[in-house]
Amino acid sequence: MFIGITYDLREAYLAAGLDEEETAEFDRPDTVQAIEDTLRDLGHQTDRIGTVHALAGRLARGNRWDLVFNIAEGLYGFGREAQVPALLDAFGIPYTFSDPLVMSLTLHKGMAKRVVRDLGIPTPSFCIVSDEEDVARMDLPFPLFVKPVAEGTGKGITAASKIRNRGELSEACRALLGRLRQPVLVETFLPGREFTVGITGEGKSAVCLGIMEIILKETAEQDVYSYVNKEDCEARVEYRLPEDETASRAVQVALAAYRGLGCRDAGRVDLRSDAAGRPNFMEVNPLPGIHPEHSDLPILCTLSGIPYRELIRRILKSAEARIGQQRRIHPPFGTS
Image (cartoon, rainbow, N blue to C red; front, side, top):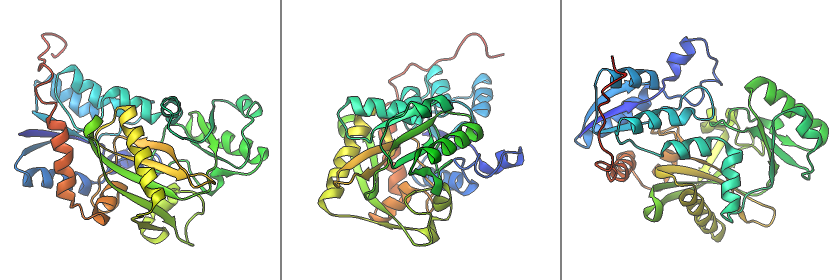
């Protein structure tokens, strides 16, 4: 099979003038290399495409692939993770991971939580702050937790994200609104254990790869799986495979959210327990990082005895089921 690879390299955006945090979600060259090496080891031919802009140019020149392995995050807007899937859908080319609807819905954490709540899946009470006037109208009990509504990799999350009073809330929301130029998700702070659940497949065939508990060391920013903690996870975080009843409940909540939101091929669901020990949905990542050693999903798989090659094979197997479901499109216009 001839497989294209779409991605955003962090070093390219840094060279263009973006800072470390702005580029936190983008990939390292060794991530792309690991994916390509694994795909070739599985018997496939590969073609590095790159960004959505490179993809658009290649499609306009008539290039086509049997499948695209997509890890491109995009740069701007709530639909940035949907850009590559939408473009490939327009040309009838199958790809790995979720479709444009799921990518856009889940990137906006507030919208995703509304759907999850409607499905009857436990998630902490929340509201969306779009301007400072929204803070004055809020009546959620303290402590609270604030984060950007549409970021990943801990961007915008620090020790100051745990909020104890209205003064801290106003200050934190003002700072995030000004710095990241997007709404702020404010939710009830859950004091319990934190988990992430790895899942592969789609719909009823979706299965849990494993569950990993995130335990912050004394050197970490406490109560938050923050940007700093994630960037220096080897020194600040302990990852452990739990095997108790709470972990089993967390897996069931994660699978219900993954299936209910329509995720496919692979993803990660993050959960935290409330004061009564009940796991709650926090967010889902339908385009999880897959650096072999630094990303949560491969770390989880390694702890669970699942080799990186097997993770990539399972992602491919799920995506391959969609090959042939769309008619391959060669538009007669707009390509010159």
